[in-house]
Length: 260
Image 1: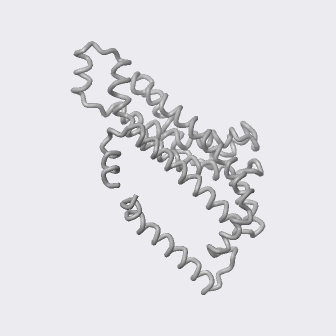
Image 2 (image 1 turned 45 degrees about the vertical axis):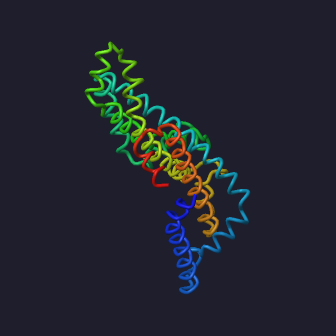
Image 3 (image 1 turned 30 degrees about the horizontal axis):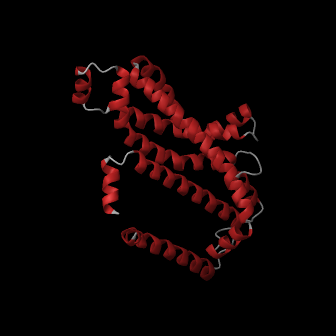
């Protein structure tokens, strides 16, 4: 615990220094609230609207979690298919690259029209599109970046393709997959909030931010942004915890534990 605190003291000090500089600059230069509210003003808005922020934060979190599950699940399935069958790789990979190349703002109005602007599933699908590509690419890399000698050894024991997948390829792919999970954890919250900028339920963070900003209550909008940051950070830490519990044998986890 002491080592952990010692390692994170510089980050905490930097965070406090940034807040102090921010607060002092706003009051010294008399910056208007609609341009940049002071941290104390944002904290006051956060405290006054805590119950509502928790409610809308949970609503958007459910959209992010749903999209995370759909996108990551689809990415893993497509990765397994492309690794197993060359024809599947030739067929699916171009579509995956094309989907990743399209800006998310182009998908949002279309999906809102398909599923309904107030339907959370439309936001989940937007998140799924965002997280699908990094999940698929990292999983494919992990499944294929296997030492050929290990595959030959399994073949020498007359192992089936399923046994090789289960005992060699998937364990080798887990570190790559958790890297993708950590990227997807942050992207999912970003995608959910941004998708709500194009319309959605009034209980959503993105809608709340746009409405408060439109009425020049920017301190409330900043308070909602803090909630989104907190949810995204919590999501990332949960994935990190699951990674340490799932692959304690991997070098990156062992090195982190040694440092701590």
